[in-house]
Amino acid sequence: DVERSRGLGDVYKRQIFGPYGYSMITLIKALGWFFAKAPQFIPQLLIKACLGIFFATKPNKLWLAESNLHHAFPNKDLKWISRNARKSLIQLAETSLFSLITPFINRNNLNRYLSISPKSLDEFNKALESGRPLILACPHMGCWEAITLLPALVDGQGRKFSSLYRPLKNPKLDAWVKESRERFGFEMLSRRQGLSTVLKTLRGKGIVCLLYTSDAADE
Image 1 (cartoon, rainbow, N blue to C red):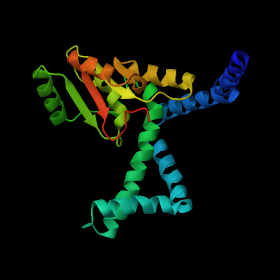
Image 2: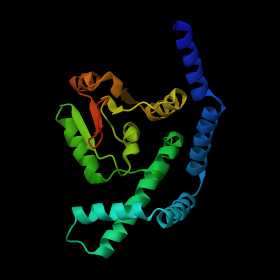
Image 3: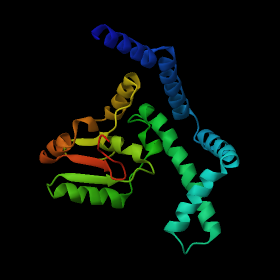
């Protein structure tokens, strides 16, 4: 049984770290580097072209988005619903692309991609002045990947920034993603460790960012 387990482990390692696994990671890094360096109109055109094909070949996906908006905003007309369904899907694609670009953002080019409104910054500073631990609740949509860049955007007054995340199945890819998200001082807490790590951060008056539309449980 021990030998069989070792054999299965070797097979599993080959599946993850084999040439295809490394090729996938290399491709992801290459695409991220390219889009980070390219003028912004290039990824925008690419997204619009890809989604144009997607809408033409998968009309049921667009219909689903329109149906959801119709139920959420029953008083809006069909033109408004159709326009915002397409806009929402475009923004979803942009968020996915931003996830590729994030590892290549540094303090020198950060302002090219992100900014915080004066009102939001003022509210954040007021919350810090309270002296209490903070929970920043973010929906799992929009530019949620940007929360890992907060330590480079605001003055946390020495407080620890952290968030729960789901580790990727590919250990090599997971290590790269985790490292890129933590390079500005943001701590990624594996949900496999449960909520104890979150409570520890809050007891230390840290700042915890939670995607409240995601389930933090193991099942």
